[in-house]
Every structure is written in C-alpha cells, then in structure tokens.
Image (tube, rainbow, N blue to C red; front, side, top):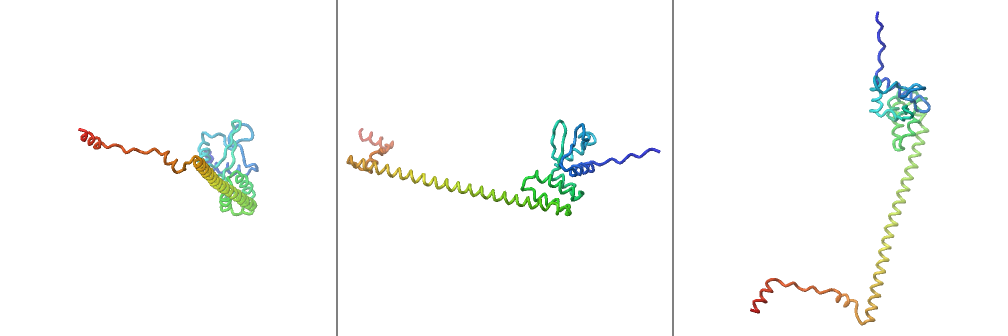
Length: 219
C-alpha cells in the first residue's frame, strides 16, 4: 500500500510560523536566509519559498538587514499585528517593545492600541510603555510649541527691526533736505526754486498740420 504524502504547509502558515518565531526571541531578530549556523528560517527565497518571501515583501511584514550575504529579519508593526492575537502576553509584551522603539513617536499610540485590541490580555504588560509614549508625546509637543514661539518672536523682531531701519533712513533723508535748504539759503536761493529749475521743460511737439499751415502762410 502506497504511503500517503504529508500535507504541504501553505505559504500563509509558513509566514505565521516565521513571524511567531521572531516575536518569541528576546532580541526581536532572527536569521531569515543564509548558510552556516544558526539555521535560517527559510532555506531560500526561490522555489517553494518564493511565494512566502514575496508575501513578506508585499505586506511589509519584516524589516530585513543584510550582512555577509545573510538576511536578518525583525518584525514590523504590520508583522506583529498579523500574529498578535496568537501570542501569549509574556511573548507579546517584549515583542511589542522591540517593535515600538523603532516606530516614529507619532505612530506609537495607534500601534499599541491596535495590539491591545487584538489581544486585550497584554494591556497590563503594555501600561508602562503607553505611559512612556504619552509622556514623550507631551515633551515633543512642548518642544514644538517652544520652537514655534521662538520663530514667531524672531519674525516679530525682524519686523520691528525693518520698521526702525526705515525710520532711521527717513530721519537721514529729512536731515539732508534741511541741510540742503540751509545751504541754498546762504546762496540766496530757495529749495523749491532749485527743484523747479532742475526739471527740464517739455516742449510741445509740433503737429503735422501746424507745419503745413506755416508753409502755406509763408507762400
């Protein structure tokens, strides 16, 4: 009687197994591909494992680091979210900490909330992390407000500086005009007449019919 073949593990099952294995390590990183010990999670990223590797990439489940032709993988927030419901609080708590420290501060509370909604039993494990994140957000907001206030103060100082600059230039202009008036007065002239004389009179242009009239009169 022929032996029945062992059921083939689906790509989705392999993906979950790899994600859970990485979540279960204290460092939050395992070798995904490469020769030598320790054994990698995948034999290769071609052949039967190509679909598995493509899922990791397409769904952004892993953060991959390449070193000495070996690939090391950490979970992304999407990767941990995918298996969070299956993990115990003792595993999920440290795994969440490993992931959240690599996220931008603005994304951390949303990520923590998503993890707790999937696995409420981990909430006690993550209370401290949530409090630390909220405190860090408050500090960042204070720093942003302080920077904004500083910028506004600098802009106001610049505006006042320009007003003072224009005021000083106007004082200089007025002083120069007054000095010129006094100098002209000593020469028996007036400022207004000097200005008027400096403007050249504009002669009225002679229209064509005027020249014709002049020629007719001369004839």
